[in-house]
Image 1 (spheres, rainbow, N blue to C red):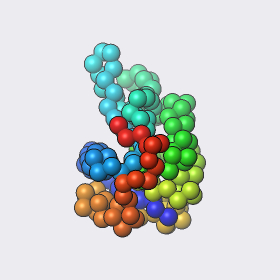
Image 2: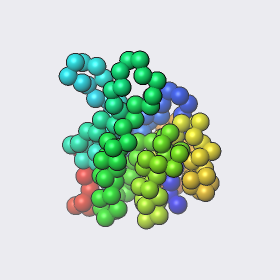
Image 3: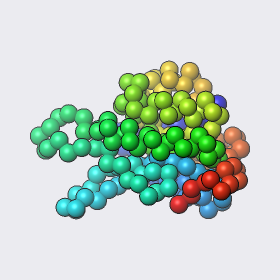
Image 4: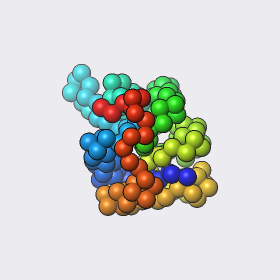
Length: 179
């Protein structure tokens, strides 16, 4: 199983920068990377919020909903997350060199969210890399049967894992969407 998570604490910014750098570097080397990745969305009023961006970079999914400033509820919008997940279904037929899923987070730790997409991709033997908050490490290990590699948020460790599993250019040819 070619599955790994970059583990971070509450602040995921370092891990996200490593992941973004990895995507950029691999794409310039001709490696087919398909992804559902975190990004920052700038709203019309200038406020920013997190979102996820599709494989081709053309679709932005606003997975957080505005519940008002006084709300203590989870802002994650399950319907928007489900819509974003649909882009991962096309990955299976494209056979990329590497799939990046933005994170195994709170909803996946509960057995929801992108759990089925993770399972389908690594069942198909596709290399999958994701971010993982340390507080969900136990659920991640249970979900993967302890077979996923746990990587520290260090660029060298991520690069070593990619080399060990043989991520190289040329995996999906004309079907690859690398933007």
